[in-house]
Amino acid sequence: SPNISSSCKTAAMGIGNMKDAVRTRACCPPGKDKPIKTFVFPKEKTVKMRWPAHRGTPENIEKYKKAIQAMRDLPDDHPHSFIQQAKIHCAYCNGGYTQVENGFPDIDIQIHNSWLFFPFHRWYLYFYERILGKLINDPTFALPYWNWDNPTGMTIPSIFEEGGKGTKDNPNSLFDAYRDGNHLPPTIVDLNFSGESDASCLEQIGINLSTMYRQMVSSATSDTLFFGGKYVAGDPPVANGAKSIGSIEAGCHTAVHRWVGDSRMPNNEDMGNFYSAGYDPLFYVHHTNVDRMWKIWKDLGIPGHSEPTSSDWLNASYVFYDENEELVRVYNKDSVKIEDLKYGYERSEIPWLKGRP
Ligand code: C2O
Image: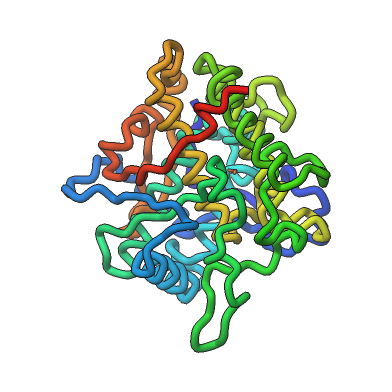
């Protein structure tokens, strides 16, 4: 299974118009020869409860804005800085790493478009959340989730846009300039996005709910259909559009990326391209909801709704900086139970479950 070594190169894969890239392609993490620790499960008792971004408490919203601002204020080369956290996505997704540790130095790693998609992003958010908590010294800190599968959450959550970038004394750390101007609130997200649709708001909500039902239930009846196909050492990076992509990844996940990304930018920065997506704070709350879909899919308890059991999947691993600035290797097998990772999701109605198309 793909492993990440300390060897890393400038990203070049999948960035359409590289010469006009507005974000850097130098995405390798600092600390090249730092030792890599083995992951241990968190020991704290408190469970970090992730909350719906469109109805956060004033206290949670303030903490969240403060933590992201603290991240932005770190020097760029700090492993916890806003930019380094964004670069993680670029390194793992745009050819920053090769499979050198597995004996394939000429083959790049791509954690998208295969069964690595869900576990990789779960780990990414796990560390990101703990880093933010550490920055504001709050062990209960939990990320919000963008509740786009519920009609009340189907616009960009207002906290990401209100007041634009704010003022010097009171910046809105959640704002990002590279978002599609036609898709700001109150425009309803298009979970099937492939170019502008002329559906009315109500029609769009209906389309979104049946999209969710399809991608979570009717076309997600096996681990392969939901997680995506096998991807192991020696396999070339799976191209976008390949058959093996999981239902959520290929569907609403990618649609939201493209819908948020600025269509006037050369590479649909920020959300519309892997190399730049992590520069938009919306990326992380989009992915907490994607992660929540994994949990919901599992909890539906339908036969077939369980993780891959192949050792190639269980033993695939990634390396991240933890909240103590140490490099940690984490495995898919340890990502399966979020209870063990000490976070959870605040309840929100799941209307698409009843709205069987
Ligand atoms: Cu790593 Cu939403 O993509």
